[in-house]
Amino acid sequence: MKINMKDVDIVSHSLNSKFKFKCYKGISCFTKCCSNIDILLTPYDIVRLKNRLNMLSGQFLLQYTYIDIDEKTSHPFVFLKMKEGGNRECPFVYEEGCNIYTDRPASCRYYPVGQGSLKKMDENLKQPYNEEFYFFVREDHCKGYQEDKEWTIKEWRQDQEAELYDDINRGWKEILFRKNLPGLSLDEKKQKAFYMASYDIDRFSDFVFKSGFLDKFDVDPEKVERMKKDEVELLQFAFSYIKYILMMEQTLKLKE
Ligand code: SF4
Ligand code: SF4
Image (tube, rainbow, N blue to C red; front, side, top):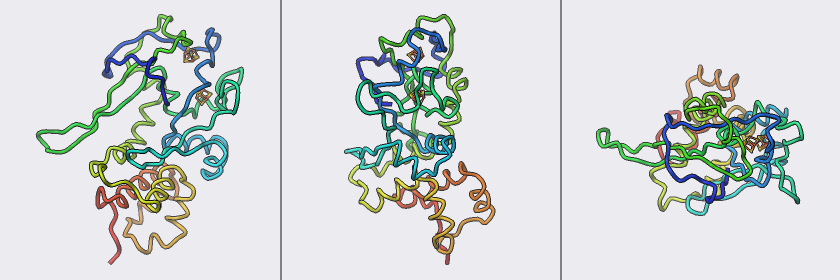
């Protein structure tokens, strides 16, 4: 979610940090947070949304999203397209609330908590790692902070199922923090491959199972069977494929 920095409480928090908050139908600000926003979609957000809407990923991307290329990294990012004009409302918000609530994107689950990552160095292992931190978004229209229900950030993440989304997207976030980032922006071919593998899971599925991919790469047959049945397994493989094409790790092996 793109957030106005004036609304961010810039103190960095841990999973044990506490806050008071409650959001419910009937609160005076109900759905006010669902317009005038830019929602970044993660790969698993798209899997959940396209299945919820009974669409192929390509159709979903075309109808509901737009692409923004990050200037520094040249990574393509996908955002939810808001309705045009007026308040730029989310296409899924109605008077009754969010009509895809159980499949809402990760950033809607986190709100009013924001999440960031810092790249750090493990001095013992001599390896970089990503340290996640949290912050609070305090927008004037959001009255949830005036309620008495207390949470730790850890409890909030569990309650909102944001943890599940983070676990599934973890491999993708590692790509965003790749250490060979400086000076290695993606050419058009890699950008397209990044886009397909990150967001267009149905096209990636065709690419793996219907092109000559499995003749070229040595993939464990049991894993292939799992990927055919389980989109999350296929998504994890897609992240490995991106790491391979971006030369981050030798995650794939060519057949002899
Ligand atoms: S997806 Fe749902 S919760 Fe998120 S902004 Fe849209 S209506 Fe609100
Ligand atoms: S309390 Fe905050 S998150 Fe809940 S509906 Fe109101 S503005 Fe949205």
